[in-house]
Image 1 (cartoon, rainbow, N blue to C red):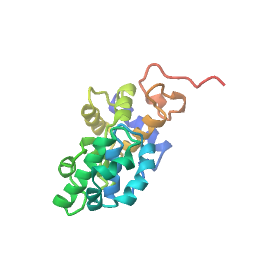
Image 2: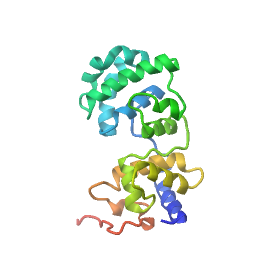
Image 3: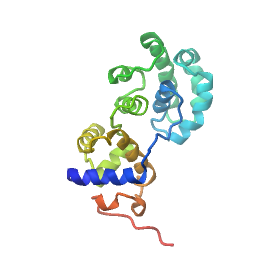
Image 4: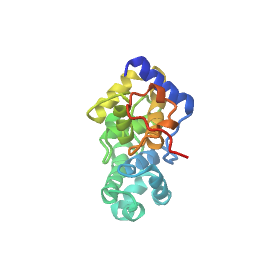
Amino acid sequence: MPRDQAAAFLHALAAANPTPQTELIYTDAFSLLCAVVLSAQSTDAMVNKVTPALFEAAPDPAAMAALGAEGIGPLIRRLGLWQGKARNLAALGALLVERHGGEVPRTREGLEALPGVGRKTANVVLNVMFGEETMAVDTHIFRLGNRTGLAPGHNPREVEDMLVKRCPPGLLRDAHHWLILHGRHVCKARQPECWRCPAVRFCNYRDKVLPPAA
């Protein structure tokens, strides 16, 4: 997809959703960080179901560390990979207290040094909480980038780098939200709902799906 076509694709998504927001529920940088860690292999909707009880029990890093994996686990066991996530959250809380005075670091290096935090999670926190122009590539954005021709790549980092290059100035921060929401709700994995896509005329996907028969 040429650069001008990619820009038109993103502008079409922007016109359809001028103020995109994450679907995760959070109140501060710590709760957002925890929610993103929990969202791996789980839906945002399911994460939002378990976090109220979790954050009531552990509203800050010190409380999360004190709760420990044994206390965290029963509160999040409806999520995929909950045992590992419980261990990561307990260790994450402890490291935030020990190394960062209980504050969430504002740098990629500081974030990625935390248990359970990789490049995608760091990009989400930097984007949503700290206003940086990052592109967090999850399974939805990876699929959409390859399917549409917007940003083909063999791995998430290749798709991320292509999107950063092709995104028009000033749109990169919101583009993360436009693309993930579009991939989650319209350009779905099993069958894209092309008839609902505001950017369909700029999409290179050959097997566009017609609306279902009435």
